[in-house]
Image 1: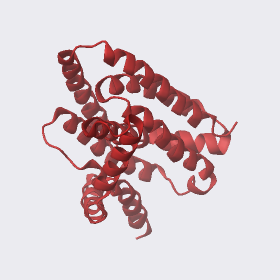
Image 2 (image 1 turned 45 degrees about the horizontal axis):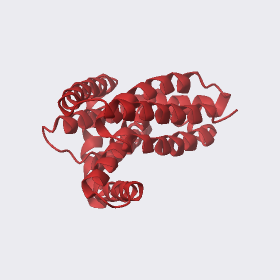
Image 3 (image 1 turned 135 degrees about the vertical axis):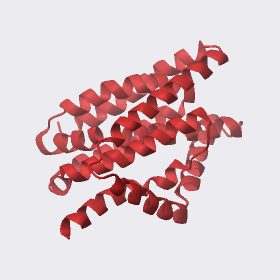
Length: 234
């Protein structure tokens, strides 16, 4: 069944989020803080590993600069946060603005972690072209475990990222025949590396060292693919 991998992936995130909520209720606040810091450090390491996929670091640098310009002009971060806050208010009935904001932040952070990376892209293409769900099933296992940890620290907003995964990976699966010839190894490497920098910034935000407007950097992922394509045409 085409698309099965994505549905399993979304289901794994929901199951992991449910387990994370149970874990969250049983942990003292001090423990939650220490665990969050540990998770943040691990997320930074994951981002660094992804960033090392780059074959040309200048592509990543230019992509981030151009992405920031586009993202700030469109103010993507404010729009996503507004959407996340709206979803949060719908879930808790508008009773607590702080809780609604936390739900929005969990949704945005988890969506980035699950959707930015080679496994999401390649797995969806394999599912769409060959009906091969091997990569997405492996990703489902990883995402389910990550969902437990993230939900225990960021709350129920992480569960909403299952919708992002359904839409993103589902679209890639449906358009696999069109995208497969376009997404070369070089493009995937630079997109993954640029996405890795964004993943690192999630960890930095969780540590509260500085608050980076990650969503305003999202266009950098698209720029990475465009730059590699344009350079290849020269």
